[in-house]
Length: 357
Image 1 (tube, helix red, strand yellow):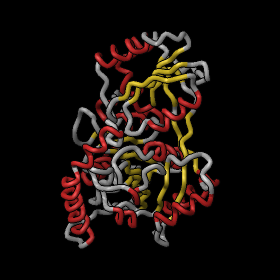
Image 2: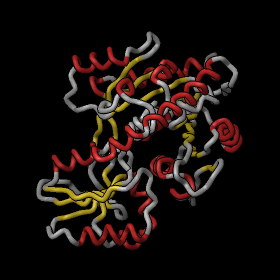
Image 3: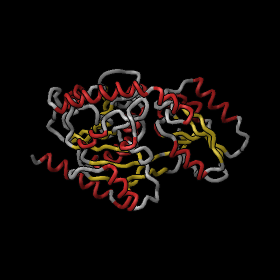
Image 4: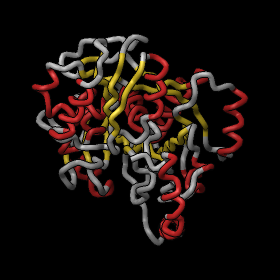
């Protein structure tokens, strides 16, 4: 559910007292860690944490994929996630028989795209990391997905993402806003990335945002934008081009579908939508609703379009999908201002320096 929708904003405002309670709890927890009353554990290998200060989609998964692609041919890489909305609990290591229901859609997508990389899930990172290292003792680098607020593990390099359309500097505490951590917690990050920027962001606009974020001397700020690839059929992987005579039924359960909706508005004749909550587990009734809505579209040139994260949760209907024009649109991120090589340099330098301590 999109709590930023206009009709729901008054409801979020009514929850303001709860946001104050939430803020107090988070502040106290951070104070306990800052005063060493609660302790953070370090591990003897490079750990890179990718996270954010806000709830919702800021683009962590595409960045994890960039890191995996960059590191997998140089090091034995492992990705450790919580496995949000999976049907299991505790630590689990992905293997050839694993499903998205067992480890969550995002970790499953990592494993599907990079089967040579270790992918594991565990709510308690402090417990999961030793188990991962026991199962995969040759691991050289661990990528922690969505773990910035989990301070029980002290990562060697912290990357914090913030949405261009909802910078953490302009946000407020849950549930009135989207902040799940203090703004000042950003000081613990080594790299700040402003995601989902418009393609034509100017240097001047970027400098204004940097001034607003007010990074510390040890921090570097990067800007990225979304790139959509060529859609492929969910089963046979044949490609299709989205064009201005195509009508699209968008089926999605992701945190922020707005960039994709904007893309379809610009590239297709028209689109319809069936939106679900983030990480929604599709049921047979959902599939029937999707088919009914699709069949009601009178245009002959039409497709069903979904995201890669949604696709892994739709694959349970594999036999039905074979007969239907259901396409998956891949997503990636692109660094603006030709800074990707600088980002890679920072990652390489961190690992090299860590290994030479």
